[in-house]
Length: 143
View 1 (cartoon, rainbow, N blue to C red):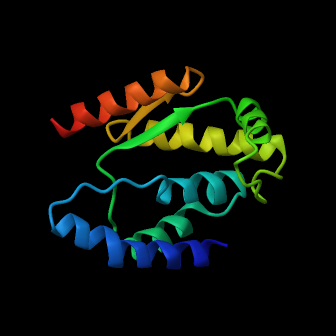
View 2 (spheres, helix red, strand yellow):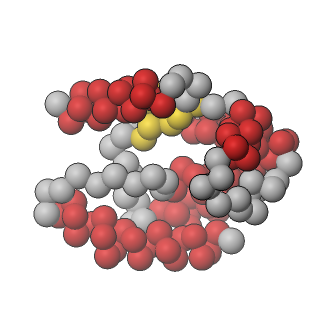
C-alpha cells in the first residue's frame, strides 16, 4: 500500500504543491507523509528507514513548515467515527485498537523527533475551541 500512496503523493507535490509554493501561495493539506510513517510504519510495522527513503524520493524531500496534530485518544477517535454518519468507514477504521494505539504512539514519536514543526492540539475540546486554536496557531506561525 505504500507504493500507491507514494505515487499519489509524488503527483500531488509535482502538480499542485510545488507550483503553488513557487507562486508564493500557502498550501494546506489534511494529511501528508507523517501519516504514512504513523500508519504504515508504526501501525503496520513496516521499516521506517525504507518508508523514509520512498517518501523523500516521492516528495522531493519536501517538508511542511508546520504540522498540526489533533490529539485524541484512539478509543475516543473510533467512537467518534462510529457516531459520524457522514464519515466513510474505511479499512483502517476496521483495524484493532492495538493498531490504533501503535499509530497514536507513532505520532508521539514523530512529534518528539521534530518538536519545532509540530503543534499538538487537544482534540477533546469543543469543535469551536479546536477551530479557534487552529486559526490562532496558523496566524502566529505566519507572523
